[in-house]
Amino acid sequence: MSRSNEQMSPQLNAYIAAHSSPPDAVLVELADETAHRFPGDEGMQIGGEQGTFMTLLARLSRARDAIEIGTFTGYSSICLARGLAAGGTLLCCDVSEEWTSIARRYWEKAGVADRIELRLGPGLDTVRALPAATTFDLAFIDADKTGYVEYWDEVVPRIRSGGAILVDNTLSHGRVIDESNDQRAVVAIREFNKHAVNDDRVVVVLLPLGDGLTLAWRK
Image 1 (tube, rainbow, N blue to C red):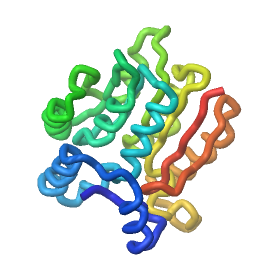
Image 2: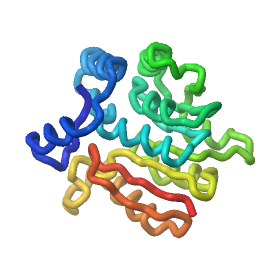
Image 3: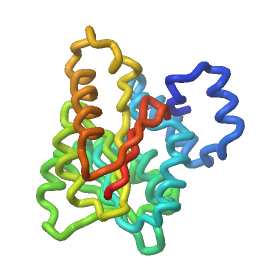
């Protein structure tokens, strides 16, 4: 199964899972196939409780148009697409045909393929190539960590007032608080977290969900 909340004990994680709506059979199958096909990379997939949270957030915010930067095998995109309002669309950006070929199969199984458009190529290029008037109600950023600040700066202006942005892995497996850790990805997450909290266009909270999930509300 997919990743649990890393900041909590296995016992507390089990309690949380037992008292949260579980993933359905399609998501369980996708998580299992991802773990089998890409051993060692399955941690790139969001956890079940995070997926449920993202679906609920999309519904509660009445999001219609969304963008995801970093799709992997499609778990998060299914969760987002399921929460969109009627007629809503999700633009998925990823660089891997191999990963997203699995996503395409599971979008069909989940009944959301008609709501999703996939564009292969660097996420920054895809966003920058969008017409200037293109805006979104919801965004999810979960791609290469060293690009987070650039993704953020491209996405924030395209989020409508009252819209939301989600950014994954913002605790970097707890390494963000170890100032002696100078790995590129860890340093990049620290820089992003400072950048986001100091951005006066948004209100931000960093949630201890999964490997850290930043939620921002666009003013």
